[in-house]
Structures are given as C-alpha cells and as structure tokens.
Image 1: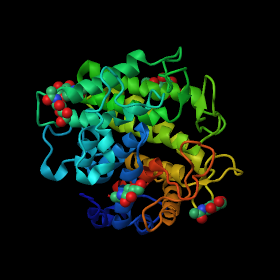
Image 2: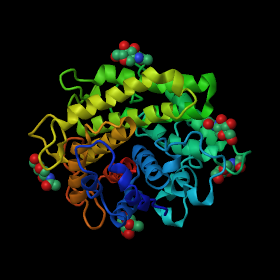
Image 3: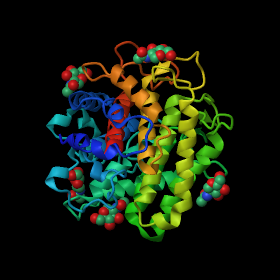
Length: 399
Ligand SMILES: *[C@@H]1O[C@H](CO)[C@@H](O)[C@H](O)[C@H]1NC(C)=O
Ligand SMILES: *[C@@H]1O[C@H](CO)[C@@H](O)[C@H](O)[C@H]1NC(C)=O
Ligand SMILES: *[C@@H]1O[C@H](CO)[C@@H](O)[C@H](O)[C@H]1NC(C)=O
Ligand SMILES: *[C@@H]1O[C@H](CO)[C@@H](O)[C@H](O)[C@H]1NC(C)=O
Ligand SMILES: *[C@@H]1O[C@H](CO)[C@@H](O)[C@H](O)[C@H]1NC(C)=O
C-alpha cells in the first residue's frame, strides 16, 4: 500500500497562509492516524459487496492512495498510458479486473471478466440504473492504462455501460435518467453513481463527442436538482417520482449529491473543455455550496448531523456527517473559501471519535433501510469508504 500521507505534515507552513477562521494546527490535529486509516481501508475492502459500495470504494482508494490519478489531482486527465510501478493503482484496477491475494474479498467481483454475456451494465445493480456505473471510472482507468493494447474488453465494457445509461434507461420528460429500471424515479444517490462516470468518459474521449458527454453529466446534475431540491432549505429530497418515494432530506442523499457534483465539476475543470464550460462549473460550485450551507445549519454541538438533516427527532448519523465534511474540504480546496471549514473540522473530530480501534465507523445509518441506525455489530460499507474519502479530502485541503 502506498499511503502518501507524510507530505501533509511538511505542508503545514503553506496551510498557515490560508485564510481560515480555524487555525491550521487545529485542522491538522483533527485528522485520523495513518495506522487507523489502514484498518478502515482493510475493513472497507472486506465488506463492500453491492455495486455502489464497490464503485464508491474504488473512488475512495483512488483518492486515498493514488491521488495523482483522481479527478481531484492537478494533472489527472488523461492519466498516463502506462502507470509507473510506484503509482500502479493496483487495488483500483483489480476491482475492474482480477484481484490478487491481498484483495481476496473481491474474487467474486472481477467485474469485467465476470460480466454476464450480452449485459450492458457492468454488474448486477439490484434494479438500480445508476449504481453499476459507479464502477465505470475504474474500468475506464484500466482501459486507458492497459499494457495489452489489443485487448478491447475494458473499453467495450465501459461503452456498454454508457450506452445503457444514455439509450436504454427510462427518463423523465425533461431528460433526467431514472435511477430505477422498473419505473421513472429520481434518487439523490444517482448523482454520485452515474454523472461522474459519464463525465470521466467524456473527458478521456475529448473532442466534440467528449464535450457532449461532459455536458450530459452536468445536465443530469441540473435536472436532478430541479426535481429534488427543497426550496426552503436548499437541501435535496431523497427519492421522488413514481411509487415508494422518500421525501425526507436524507443526510447521505445530500452527501451523494454534493460529492457527485464535485467530481463532475473537477472532471470538467481538468478536461480540454474547461474553458468553454465555465458557467457549468460556476453552477455546480454554487449547487454544492447550497447543499453544504443547508446541511451545516443543522449540525449538532458535537459535530454530528442527523440522519434526516432537519429532523431533531431522528438520530445521529456518522456516514452522512463524513461525506458532507468530505465535500466541504473539497469545495474549500477548490474555491479557497473557508466558509464550511469550521463545520467540517467539528465533523472530522466527531468521525475520529467514532472510528473504533479496529477501524470500524460506529454510529452509522443502516444504508439499506435509510431510516434506522445500523444494528449493533453491523457496519456500513459505504460509511467505511466515506471515512477514506474524508481523510483524503482533509489531507488535500491541508496540502
Ligand atoms: C474479513 O471478514 C471475515 C469475516 O467476515 C474475517 O474472518 C476476516 O478475518 C476479515 N479479513 C480481514 C483482512 O479483515
Ligand atoms: C483482456 O483482458 C482481460 C483481463 O485481463 C481478460 O480477462 C480477457 O481474456 C482479455 N481479452 C482478450 C481478448 O485477450
Ligand atoms: C480505451 O483506450 C483506448 C486507447 O488505448 C482509447 O482509444 C479508447 O477510446 C478507450 N475507450 C474508452 C471507452 O475510453
Ligand atoms: C446556470 O444556472 C443559472 C441559474 O439557475 C441558469 O439560468 C443557467 O442556465 C445555468 N447555466 C447553464 C449553462 O446551465
Ligand atoms: C452527538 O450528539 C448527538 C445529540 O445531538 C448524540 O445523539 C450522539 O450520540 C452524539 N455522538 C457522539 C459520537 O457522541
């Protein structure tokens, strides 16, 4: 493993110049140790099984261990054609391909090799349109950096996933791609699952076709916000349209939306179309800020958010607290505005206090029910990845 964390501490002098109302040393001292993060990572690898959990973990591993290849890296698009030995992204690429001994839990998820013949989605999505696409960025990276140039299996798999999203999946009359296969329904979760893949695909393609995909990724964020945004708070409802809606202002749903829009924004910013898509970047920036502003007004004194952000009768949830803090550090790194940093640092301290000595995040919402805390002794796969995302975002903010 190549945890690249030490340079952070060499960069504190630079952070001292940053205009934050929270002192740099208080930001730096709020973080988790490398040793604990290594345990969080091992646990995340061991328990992530659903499509969206695997896709989120692939992104978390990229940001944590191979930051030069993540869209938050300064020069990540396109990645090198051949990855240097020191920056080989092996755990990320093996999610797309064949895991090695230390990644045993993924034996059943050689995603491309195990793809059902004739299926367009990368993996079974339990009825979700968006979730399988969350693994798409890892597949694109695998294709782009593959040593065997004749092998088109990764490219074909990514193209199939894109075709499914753009041509086969149901849509609203306005053009928002449904998050469900069986009915037209929008979930805030979708914004982390599909638009970042569509954007990364477009950024790697380049040219007019690539720009159209970047625009599509942006439009999906815009169309989702048009439907899901609550005008009173600026926060997003969880699930609207169709049968079985959840109109709550779900913490994790808002985290998915903010973190997904940030990835689309950074992908546009790193692409050849950055100059002609300025207004899209400006809008995405303000839409992320809108969610963070809405969420942190409900932060409790110990740093936590509640599962339903605006409902003090729900319960404290570390998962959404971690993901919204992640987005706060990322947005501040991008814009230079320290507005959400005090809230993010309070949240980071709460998360540090909530990761036990074995590397498990305690106090999560059950990610399958959305509405109840995780049962005692049961852990949240996405929550584990959110801790890794938070750690990476904090580290990059300090640097
Ligand atoms: C993964 O989880 C299983 C139990 O489900 C456990 O036996 C094993 O030790 C865990 N592996 C690691 C590397 O934590
Ligand atoms: C391409 O590479 C994948 C992963 O290594 C492998 O499973 C597949 O058989 C290869 N396809 C061809 C045509 O060589
Ligand atoms: C896969 O990589 C090749 C370059 O090796 C590139 O031409 C192709 O567009 C890539 N496929 C996708 C879907 O990005
Ligand atoms: C950006 O947002 C504004 C305000 O909602 C909207 O009028 C404008 O059309 C958006 N720009 C783009 C490129 O979508
Ligand atoms: C934080 O405070 C809330 C009440 O606002 C409480 O329910 C929760 O358990 C506290 N979290 C921790 C980790 O102490």
